[in-house]
Length: 245
Image 1: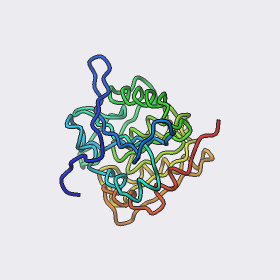
Image 2 (image 1 turned 135 degrees about the vertical axis):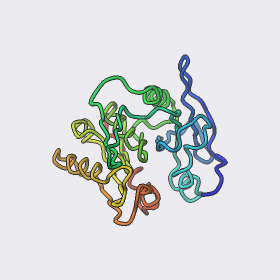
Image 3 (image 1 turned 30 degrees about the vertical axis):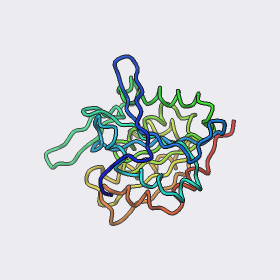
Image 4 (image 1 turned 45 degrees about the vertical axis):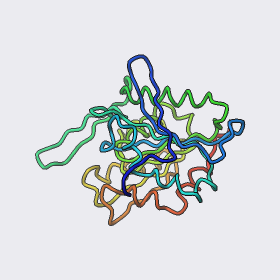
C-alpha cells in the first residue's frame, strides 16, 4: 500500500498513570460534535505492534479513507496500537517440534495492560456526546481478532456488531458473546493461525443458536484481511446493526 503517512488519522495518546495506549483517530468529514456518530475500533495484528503510533494503520485504514466510504458511512474510526512484547488478549502461544503454533486462551483473569487501557478508552468514548452508544463496533485481524473475541467476552453488551479476521479463541468463551452479530473470516491456506480456529468458533456459535457470517477463502493464506476488507458489503453489514435498549 506504499509508505504510511497517517494522513487523515490524527495521532493521540490515552495515558493512565504510567501506562500509555497510542491510537489514531479518523473523524467523519465535516465532523459536528452535536451529531451522534457510530464508532469503530480496529485492532491490528502482532506485526504492527510498537510505539510509532503509525504501523497499526498498515492494514484496513485505506478503506476508511476512501471518499466514497467517508460519505456513505460517516463514523469515528479508531486504530489503537499495542506495544511491543505485549498482546491484546491473554493467550499463551506454544510452537511444537513441527512448527505448528497452538494458542491457549484464558477464560478469566485480569486483562493485559493494552486490553485494560483499550477497555478504559472505549468507556471514555462512550461518554462522549458525539458517539451513538447503540452503534459501537469492534474488529481486528490475527492478534487483533483474538483481542476482539476477548473484548466481546468481557463487554458483550457494548457492541452492536463485530468482525474477526484469522483469529482464535477458547471455545469456552464463545457463549459469552453469542448474542453479538459477528462476521468471521479466514484463509484456508493459513499456517500462522490455522483456519480450524475460526471454523470451531463458527460451529460453536451455531450450536448456541447464533447465526454468524463466515467466509473461508480457499486460496488465501494468513493475509485474509485483504479479502475481508474487499467484501462489497463489509461495511454495510457492519453499520447496519444497532443495539435496541
